[in-house]
Length: 130
Image 1 (cartoon, rainbow, N blue to C red):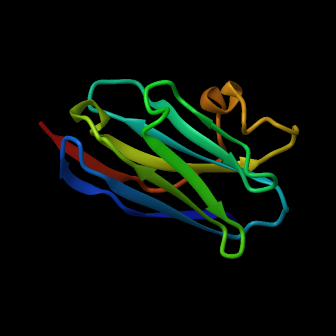
Image 2 (cartoon, rainbow, N blue to C red):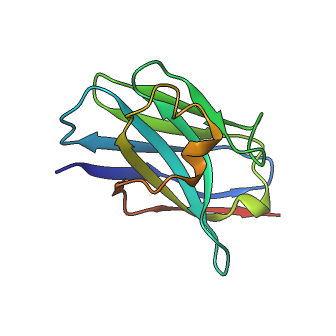
């Protein structure tokens, strides 16, 4: 089956940068939507960003737009999240998610942030201190 393994994250002061990577294996289709979600203690999980492995279309939540950059590398099925100008409210466990992109342009739309992805990674902690 599909496996997702996250790496990166860590601790940084406000205004700093961190990078997360998600390495996927076991893909059997050509087109996938890969996304990042986060969940802070006591809060609901929220979508952060998503990207299509097919055409690279991406979607960003308003809370991270202009600060985070999602990218993908299809050679080794990796999705990365470059996080800049980090704020304490960005502190959370970040999860990589993936699913087959059945509908064109799905991944580049707001729908991807509310979708129940099939495959999930184990999570990577991001902590931003004031």
